[in-house]
Image 1 (cartoon, helix red, strand yellow):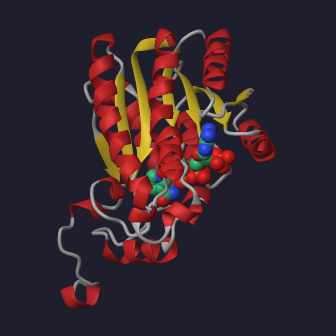
Image 2 (cartoon, protein in one colour; image 1 turned 30 degrees about the vertical axis):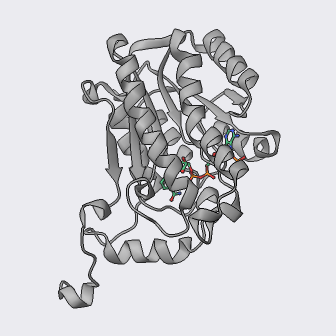
Image 3 (cartoon, helix red, strand yellow; image 1 turned 90 degrees about the horizontal axis):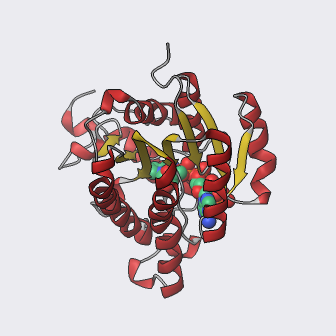
Length: 265
Ligand code: NAP
């Protein structure tokens, strides 16, 4: 008996088999959820369809979240196929490469707007569009990163966007609370994905993370998937508006010291 048997789950933001969305999709499927997958644009279809086939998912829809009509059409199609939705996962972010290196003050107006629109507003827009077909007890989940609360060099406008996303999570949790619909964020440690490749200095940061996190290891898309199962399931029934860190404990450390200096290894 899976933890999500009989639940209908939609995952937005699948690009390839390295995507966090893929780790989440596989975990939700493993626990018995009926899965729908949404991807950004036609060019991704080639990579997304074989993944959908792997888990026997036949509801695969394009949705560019910058377009209101795409979001409305996706909600309509989801209603037609699933009736009601129990789990909605937002695993989407975008900032131009030029915004993700150098000083934050070089962020352009257009770059700022794009990052906010795609990485933050889209979560609010999806929540609104799907509200009429969300079951009581439904769970909305988005993906964030520690660069929202502390400076992660080069993360720049995306850190600011993640701060807004985490704040949006709390406001949405407040709005949806009376309907018994929960809204939470997962703050994942660095994972090598397409989106991460665009962040300046990501390689070094990834390596540093493994050296410095209390558990001395990087995290995987499967770790995030398992945390998403918890937030999607009734096990987290009274948890809303929270940011759940899946980061080998990296965020709890105030003063970073090398393993050598600490004499732990
Ligand atoms: P990813 O595989 O590249 O996923 C990002 C997804 O966002 C892609 O599917 C991308 O599609 C989609 N997207 C961009 N613009 C879109 C639009 N207009 N409409 C719909 N979808 C759009 O990278 P990921 O690392 O798994 O990212 C997933 C989430 O996890 C993001 O919110 C990211 O910030 C967050 N996160 C990542 C890490 C990490 O280290 N990787 C850590 C913490 C949090 P395209 O490929 O077509 O742009």
